[in-house]
Each structure stands twice: as structure tokens, then as C-alpha cells.
Image 1 (cartoon, helix red, strand yellow):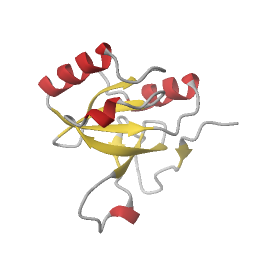
Image 2 (cartoon, rainbow, N blue to C red):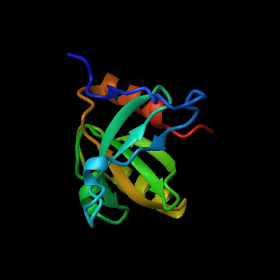
Image 3 (cartoon, rainbow, N blue to C red):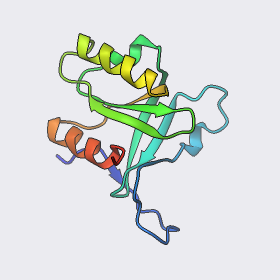
Length: 129
């Protein structure tokens, strides 16, 4: 079965996507609390994610997820696979580092079904250095 990272090419883009960008979900636009969002990777694939404040411990409690550290100006600062064991010292150190780098939220993508799908999502969403 294919990974659940959906491909929706941007029909209005004149140039290829060179970095990931947030594409908020229209269905949640009227809600006072933003709990979900979507990111479009460089490939054009769309990744739906749950939104948590950087201090929310629930963000680090998911196993086998893609974690995105997002700045106040809606840029992905860092990304990582949460791993198969959930909360661990490495995730806590990662959160401390991204907080110091300016992250305000952690977006959690749970729809990648296996390690290969998560690696593909990370490569697609990871900020370029």
C-alpha cells in the first residue's frame, strides 16, 4: 500500500516549489483554535499535520511520526522522525534546540505508514541548508 502523503500539484505555480510551504486547511479556517494544517513539500505532495505549541508535551508523545519545528513566521526550522518509542531524551533535547532556534509550534504528521514513507516526507519537507 502506498504512503498516505497525497500529491496535489499547485496548478497556479509558475515555478517549481523550492522549499516546503504551509497550506492551511480551508475546512478549519473558521475555527478559533488551529488544530490542523497542511504543508506542501518540494515535490508537490501535501502533508496534513496536527498543530501543537512547542511546550505541549503531547507533541513528543507520538510514535512513528514526522515532527516539524515551525517558527512564528510559518517556516519549518527543523524536522525529524519521532522514532518507534515516543518520548525519549533525544526528543526532549531536539525540542530544546528548536525552541532556542525560534520554534513556536511542533506540527505532527502521522499519515506516513512506514519508515521509508517518513524518510521521504522528511526529505520533502526538510529546510534546505
